[in-house]
Image 1 (cartoon, rainbow, N blue to C red):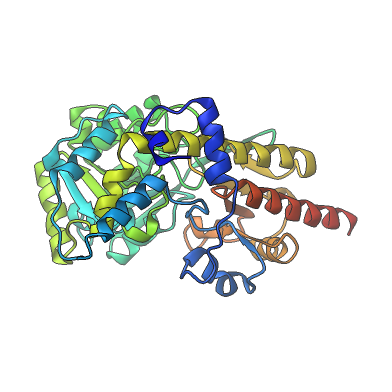
Image 2 (cartoon, rainbow, N blue to C red):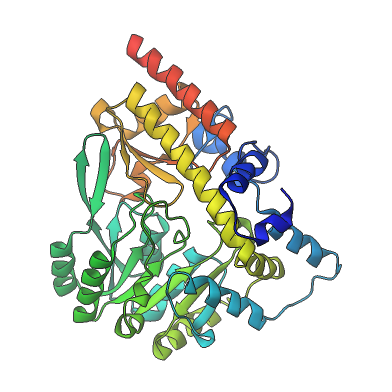
Length: 418
């Protein structure tokens, strides 16, 4: 597919062609200092696994982004750069698609969303304060509280099962109890949620934000997966009202949508001048400011009309992989529960029907299915173990997905015989 085709709205035929051109063929990432591949032996004891763990896509970076980086390299000088208005305007235009009105002065750059957590926690809390997180959740949420010397309060999401589906809801009753009794000054909120894939509804967001307003809790909202919504739509929590925006730090990046994790791109949107000043103070204390040269040009290219069309094609591919997994499990292992396909390219699998502890489950997946997944217990506080949950990354080529399911089928058949 010619790069110019990404500049116009894609037809169904063009999206299908994109799958054949970019998403069907695996890319050899070995010996490229890839965390996902070069840590296999360390994490799984062998290189003989398909790595489907860290949230990093095994899909080629969009060609128009590669072209933008090549064009910059053609200049042959990689000196210091400033942040042009075009970068700020790109963010503003991109967020407008979510009905989120952002102003230039509200944008602060970080080196990634995870260090944005740490900066935000330091900006809006004191060491004696508590930070609330809802688990299971992306591990750096818990680390942001612990490593900055704050007290971490973990509140479980409410888990429900229906047929072969796991669903999660916020526990509003206990959120309010925690706000009133645990000295909570900030809420680290995953939106959409990693690993359970929830797209929080407007009703849920309104209820949560009102509790935060009532108890003076600052919302630190990780919205890095906001473009990877498979069903429904993403509503930035700061877009609910000006009052909510004044109590919110929104963190985002094109990193997940466009597989740019290695470029260290992140930004915060902070409407409240005081919170923004505190955030900037925390950033300056560790000399974090602006984006590097390649991150800058990648962001501008990603947040362009071409980026919209690329995202449409990517979402179709992720949906196809998710559907394949659902069909496979229904046929070969209906007792393994799976989250609803709402958002992200990450799947939350529940093997609890087998009655195996986490270590046994991991060993079986590695040795028998030859799959390297993320351990479920890493998404909970340290005192919780043996969750029988695993997180699986579906942002892989069609060929890789088929190979993974073949290996899983053979392992399941062998387990049945034994």
